[in-house]
View 1 (cartoon, rainbow, N blue to C red):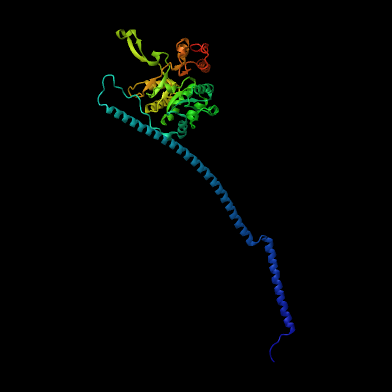
View 2 (cartoon, rainbow, N blue to C red):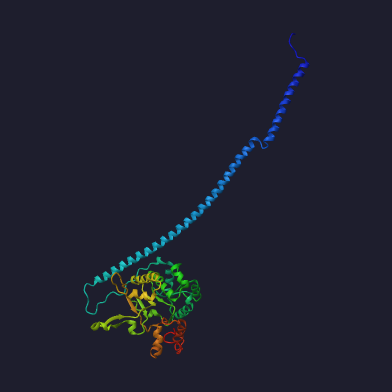
Length: 435
């Protein structure tokens, strides 16, 4: 055959060439690997991937911290807005209550006026001489328990025939208060209540089984209750009593420098808006008199007649739940809040007695003066009664130690004289005071 065939030598030469090429390629690959391993120890793609993840993680953490900070600030802002809204809501609710009270009083006043018109309208002609009488006993207001449901619940249990004795007290008058309620218990009077102006009086009354009521917080009243003296506390009572009248209860307001010897409710007339004890000491000063003022320079008209009466005592008076009575309390409380140096008793009498004139509208409240021997002030007792053997036999309803600053020892002497029978108990004291 003429075909070509390679010999063994040719085949060996070809195989060696191929192995040489493969070895060279492997060597080059390994060399390149060493180069990349030296210059890129972390790898080409791994570094980039980690960089991306790390940047995303940092960004996420930053966003989380920022979001957490924003949320905290947002919560604080919402809390602040909530507190502000709550305060505004409380103010609005208070304004609504005040306006509602004024509206109800206005409606009741209108109803009262209509009743008066109807009452007068029924009598078209005047009756015989000496038989005509005007309207002097005003109708009571419609009770409104929404004014103070808690107080309404207490009064329902304490009051009898919708009337009770009320005293306002703080811890400054604790000793006199104890003597006050002890005399009330001794006289057998069940319907009385202490309005406490501090926690100490609340606990003191509860300990002695004395009905007590403490108002809801009111800074205008509480600041006086914490530190106020006798006159300051006395001035707060006009604001406090208003709720009692709105609830439809008649109140016998009492200071604590008073000793009770009989039940006063057995000696009231209840025909006027206000029935008060007097600071007068005889028939003239207590019930009024014609006082003639002389001015010689006027010649023929030198004598001028004036009407005088000694003031009502604002520490002991019976007040009915009527529109004029509530208006009296409002007037006095309003003036005392504006006139810081005014005496509550003076303001009480001015509002009760001053007539209408010019732009001033006087109060149309009916009034009655209590018997000054039954509802006795300490001037009557120490200047007159204790020196008269016949008057000493009388038993007053109450004795108010209002004319003397040494109140507590004189109160104890009154108890000794009228309750314990010590006939000389009143003797050591002067008619007036030593200062």
